[in-house]
Amino acid sequence: GLLERYEGRASNLIAAAGGSAVELVGLVLDAFPGFRDYAIYEGRRVWLCKRAQIFVGDVWGAFRGQGLGRFDDIGQLTTFADYRVPVVLRQLGILKYSQHLTEQIQSRQQLQAGSGAEVELRACTIVAVEAILRGMQRRLAARAKRGPASKQLDAAAVAQAASDLEISSVLIDWWLWEQGEKERDRAPPHHRTLSTFY
Image (cartoon, rainbow, N blue to C red; front, side, top):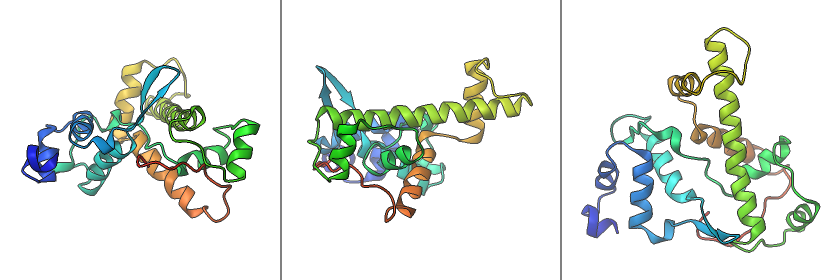
């Protein structure tokens, strides 16, 4: 844990990552077993890492990407898959639930942690936010080239545009989460899962 490996200081843990968000997620997962957010889905281990990634995202945000919060690869983190963002994605028409899942959520039935439905919901949230990110990157890269958005842009141009404008899944997550919080009294219910991971 923190005490044994990092002299009890979170700053030492963060510094040990050498400015890498991905490395810091790995160090957090290694030091804190309670952050090892994964499920076995159809025989495969699916890592979701919500709390480890949100820790890194919060450090980055608190330090505004500077000093201890400077991570050159912050764009490698995914959205922090939990319960609020899927509701917003559903309201936007990005996620669609099966009738059975809709009924379970509407009637506030608990989804078992690690169940197929719960893992699919969280994983689809990550995939959806990544698709939003890629779409934004293409549009911004095209705008930077002063041309129409096109799937023909090379990967390097898209990555450079995202880097220049600091667009990431972390920022998209924060915006979606804030929208969800603003609408929480009027929004449809979120899924319910008893879990220490979110």
